[in-house]
Length: 237
Image (cartoon, rainbow, N blue to C red; front, side):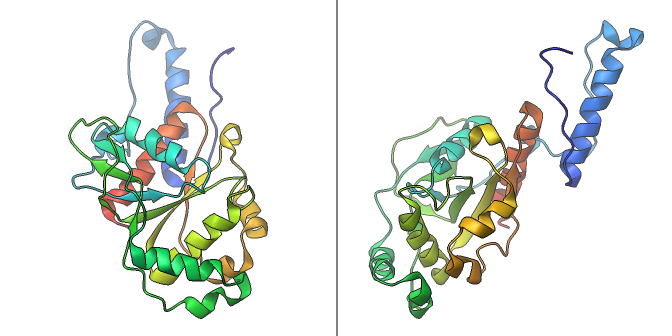
């Protein structure tokens, strides 16, 4: 009917189950025995935002050169009231020094500094606290380097700066958190796009060896997308 969000079908298990549940809900809502009553369908082991908590502080670095990354962390924080968003001033000096050396090295020769140590990353973070709103800047250590994959990544005026940061993160062994924006209204695109716009040396370094968490459009599917990301943060995977 007019004004109703279309129910999309996705290839992954949790999203397929959600689509089946939404279809069944709409069908039952049109039946006489259900039309006048409020009801809610659920799976016994359903993954939802309500079923997840982040029991300990989780640090995330959303690069200022990655369009939409900080906004995504803020979005995650609004869904999980136990989370707060903060920023620290800068990476520690070993990271700054490594980034400076990477900046004077061409993409083809970036592997020459692969053994340069980078102790850790500092930056904007997602930190779990009981019912805490977004907070002021903090110096807590970042556990993950967030990379929001969208149509603009590596393409805007900040593309080379972001590539330098990602090279340093890969060389240091920092944990990457890959999130793929699918919603076209949020600058989303097909995953195949990234194989043509990502610098060749980053592809060779295995930037896409891990699976990226998809951020789907639609109210219910978006919430499930955030739950999948939170599950990865909670599990340390």
